[in-house]
Image 1: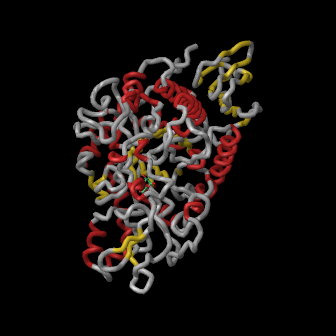
Image 2 (image 1 turned 30 degrees about the vertical axis):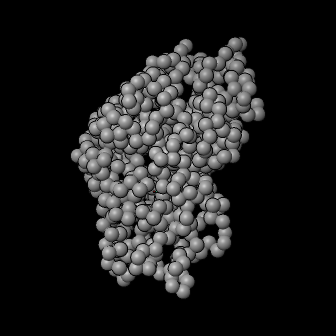
Image 3 (image 1 turned 45 degrees about the horizontal axis):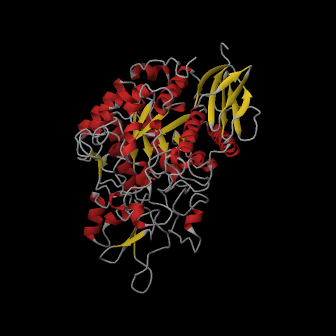
Length: 557
Ligand code: GLC
C-alpha cells in the first residue's frame, strides 16, 4: 500500500465538530502562525491577517484542528509584537479589527479554531498606562501598575536588585527622574505589577473582549512570570543563567500565579464552545508545569522538556513517560512540541550534535537534520495528547543561520546575552511557490531574506511530490484523524526494543522510532500505516533505516 493512502475524515462545519468532539483540545493538533512571516496580503514585505485568511484553506487541508496566532496587536514591534501598546487593537501593519473578526469567522466556517496570544506579563513602553506613569513622575498612581523603585547606592545610581533581563543586561532601566522600572525582557517591555487590582481587572476585560469576538482560546505568554516574590529579593550572586529553567526564581514560577489562572478559568467557562488556555510556562520540571493545568486552571501547557530533548531513544522515552505521569494526576492532556518562534527549528537542532541547547547558530548536517526531524515528527504525532506545529516545519524548513546582522530584529541579539538572540533564523517568511520575488509569501519582498533554495522547499514544490515532507505531514495528520483515538488516552504501552529504538503500542496502533545512525530490524506490527522513510518488510520483519519512525496497525492485518 502507498504511504499516503490513508483516508482523511472530511472537515465539517465547526458546530458539528464541536458537538461531536467536546474536549477537542485534548487531542488537537494546533498550528502556530507567526503572522509577520506567514503570508503577506498587501505586498509590503510583512505578513498580515489578510494573508493568513487567504491561507486558511491550506491549513484545513493540511489537517490541523486549530491555529494559534502570535501577537498582531498594536505594538511598536520592539519584540516582534510581544510588546503590546493596545490589547484591543490590531496593528495597522497586520490589518484591522475587522480583519481579525473576519479571520475568526472564516476559520470557523472551515472547521478550524483560532487561539490568540495574550501577553499579560508586560506591556509595551508605549502603552497608555506606562506613558502616563512616566509623564506623571514619581508618586503617580500609574507607577504602581508597574514595578517602579528608587535605585540603590548613594544617588540611587544602582538598580534596585540584581535581576537580569532574559534578553541580557540588567532587568531594570532608569528613567530621567531617577526611578527605575523592572523589565524581565527588553526595556521597551515594562513588567506589570499583578498585585495591583487594576491590572487584573484590565486583563479580565481583555479576555472578554476577544472571547466576545469569538476566539477559541488564548496562549498565555510568560505565564510563569506574572507574580514576583515579595520584596523583589536579590538572587545574591547565584548565576541566573544556570538557575533559569532549573530552579524556581523570584520572578518565575512563583506559586502566586495560580490564583490568577483560577480566576481566568471561571471567565472562560462562562462562554460556550469549549475554549482553552495554553500556558507558555518555563518551569524547572514537568511536575511543576502540571500545576498550571490543574482542573480549575489552564487547559494545556507547552512541554518544553520535550522540546529540549535530544534525538535519543532513552532520553525521549524518559521525558515521554515522565510527562504522562505528571499530567495524569491533574487530568490534563500531555502536549508535545518540537519547534516554535523562539527556538532553532528542529530540522536544524537535530542536524547538530546534542547538548547545544535550543539556540543554535550552525547549519550542521542538513540532510541528517531533516531525516531526524521527519522521524521526530511522526513520533510526536503518535503520542497521546495534543501536538503543536510551528509554521514551515511541515516543509522541513531549516533555520536560516547566516542572516546578515543588518537585517536581524531579535532584541535579544542586540542586548547580547551571549546565549541568545538568534531567533530571527526561525522567523524567515514561508515559501509558498517555486518562483517569485518572495516565493509567494507576498507580492513584494520579505522582511527577512529567504535563501535562494527555498523555492524548492515551497508548498508548491512539495505538493503532490511523493515522499516530500509536506506530504508526510498531510498523511500523518490524516492517519491521526482517521485513527480516531490516536491523540486520545493518557498512556502508552512500551514494547521491548533494541538500544536506540523506541517502540510502543496504543491499542491496535504501534509506533517504532529508530533514533540510531544504523538500520535496525524489528518485528513488523501488522499493516504499515506510514513511515518517515522507505522501509523494507519481509517475513514479519521490518528493516528500518537510520533515523526512521514507522506507524503500524494490527487492525485488519
Ligand atoms: C515569550 C515569547 C517570546 C517573547 C517573550 C517576551 O517567551 O514567546 O517571543 O520574546 O515572551 O514577551
